[in-house]
Structure formats: C-alpha cells, structure tokens
Image (cartoon, rainbow, N blue to C red; front, side, top):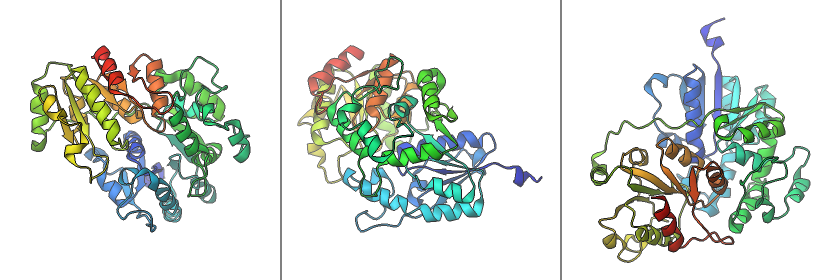
Amino acid sequence: MSKKEEEVHVVMVPWLAFGHMIPFLELSIALAKSNIHISFLSTPRNIQRLPKIPPNLSSLIDFIPLPLEYSDHLPENAEATIDIPADKMDDLKIACDLLQRPIKDFIAKKSPNWIIVDFFPHWAIDIGRDLNIPVIINYVFTASAATFFWIPEFLTGYQRRQARQLPEDLMVPPDWIDFPSKVAYTRKNEAIAMHNVFYKVNASGIADGDRLIRLLQASRAVCIRTCAEFESEYVELFAKLAGKPVFPVGLLPPEKPDHTINPSDTPIFNWLDRQKPRSVVFVGFGSETKLNKEQIHEIAHGVELSDVPFIWALRKPDENCDDDELLPLGFRQRTAEQGVVHLGWAPQREILGHPSIGGSLFHAGWGSIIETMQYGHVLVLLPFVFDQSLNAKLIVENGLGVDVERDDDDGSSNRKRTNELDVDCF
C-alpha cells in the first residue's frame, strides 16, 4: 500500500462564526500533528481572516474556499456572523445551506475518511450516507452545555417542543442531570432568546435544535472541546445519553503569541509596562458580542467607580456611532490615569499575556474562557447570549470565577453591581 493510500484524510465543516471556525482550526492543527491530512472548508474571506498555520504543518492542512451565494438580503462580503447584525442571522443560515451542493461535490471528488461537522449542516448526514463516509459532530462548547441541551432521541418535532414548552423550562437543570448542577439560565430574557433559537423554526426552514438532533442521532461519534479533568461528570453523562463514543479532545488553547509588538500597538504596551504586576483588569467582549450604547455606559461607569486599573478593547456597536458619544461624557478625561480605552481591534492575546494583567471582565464565551484561563487570571463574567450564561455557571461551579449580578428578568446590570464586584475581585 502506498503512503498516499495510507494517509488519513478529514474534511472539516465549521459554522460561519469565528467562535466556531477557530476551534475547528485548533482541532485541525492537533490532528495534523498526528500526520492526518485536513481539508478545511469555509468561504474565501473567512479563510483570509483565519490565523496562519504553523509552517511545519502547512502541507497537511488545505483551506478550501467555497463562495457563498448571496441573497438580496445578505450584504455582499458578509461571510460570517461578525459581518452582520442579529436580524440577518437567518439570511446567513440560508446562504450556508446553499453550500450543500459544492461541499458534496468536493467530498465526492476527494473521498475523505471522515467528515467532521459543526452543529449547523444537518444535510452532512445525507452526504455521508450517499458517499458512505462516516460523520462526526464536533461541539465547540462545553460538555455541560451539551448535556443541558440534550434532547432525548425518541422525541421529535412537536413532542420535543412539548418537553420544554416554555422558556422557564430552561431556567432549571434538566431532570436527566443526576448530580448537583447549577448549569441553567437564571435570567428570563436569555432563556426566552435561547428557547427561540433552539426550538423555533426560522427562515431557513428548520430550528437549530432540529439541526443538532439530526446530526447527533446519525453521527458516528461526538467530539467536545473539553477535558475530563474539568467536567468529568458531564462528559460521562453525555456519553451515556448519546449512546455513542464521546471524545473530549482537550481545551485546545491557542498557541501563546511570541509577543512581537506591532508599532501601532506600542502605546498600549508602554502603558502596561508602567503598571504593577497583576494589577490591571482587561475588559473585552469579543467580536461576536455587540454591546449597545446603554450597556457600554453602565460598564464604563462601573469600571470607573471600581478605581481598578483597566485596559478596555472596545468595539463600536456600529460604524456610524460617534466616538464622542460612545462613552459617558468626560469618561476618558476622568480615567486618564486609571486606564486605557482602545477602540477597534486590539492584540488581545498579547495583552492577556502581559505580566501586569491580573483579571478579565468579559462575556464568558467558551473560547475566551479557555484563552484567559491559561494565564491564571481572575475571571469576572458578564454573559449576554447563547451558551455564555451556562459557561459562567460552570466556571462559578468550579470556583474559577464570579458572575456579575444581574436583573433576573431583563439581564440588565448597573454600574453599582459592576463596581462592587470589581472591588471584591481586584
């Protein structure tokens, strides 16, 4: 048998969000280190924006660009969730579903050994069946979230929605979690939003929960970006519920940067160099969480009242937002000695690794938690969407962080709550 015939070839199909593409890329790199050939499928612009592959692995990871078919409602060059407002999400799902044909054509031509997919492309099951190629679903979230959202296989469609008829049903741990757990939504607005995402049929013609259960039922195995040491009970329970192999592939943290500083970022690091070790809190809510003006103002007031040194990587709610109105009146002047606000993209990983950083105030996205934990920071969690609240509960459950106090109905947080929490932690 030739070397080429012995080579294992895996096709990766992530959802078009960087909180999904990056973990899929990290898994690709981990597999390539075992001499497994990877074909990473995404859109041309997304591929350009992904991190570079380590040179020693570049021959084993091929990026396959597949252009989206744009509808009248999806802006041109919008290829990921970061590029669109929340009300355009269904249009991106529709465009992504149209990739089914080119993906099937590619897989038929290459005949890989495995297809590893995200929660989204339920039609990958049909591709795998038609081409006799096994499918693995890869969860980029926690085993606790996977267990929380578990849907018994024997319930489908209407029956399943009856099992969790109301958003309030998501505000308590489900009956099948047979050990003490705090992982559930505690704020009604988040439970309502997630109930709609999971159970409501959207403009793409199928609910996200139905996509997930179809993949889970027909996949050969499940990978989860976690480790048994961190949430062993949830991993074991989910494997029992799923009735198939469940592989915790590890946390897969990104490689620590080499700290080569871009000249344009020099003022940030000059300021950090003047601070005491582990005295500064990094404030940042990632690329996917789009804060509104009111939320930004309350966070700003809380950070100011805490009197803790801070560096804030702040993204505008939209490009038309006036810089002078983005922050509270006089905030920059009052906090000139206390901290730094950096508008737009910032070298987050380099900042997190700086010795003056001692804590992070952020949104509790699983990827951000993993990235932050490797530096041993205090974790101050202010979740907003999707699984972030569940992640926050898991972190608190493990004694690794604190969750900012919020209103139980609308999830709002005022400056007093943020201030008190920051003072206690830093």
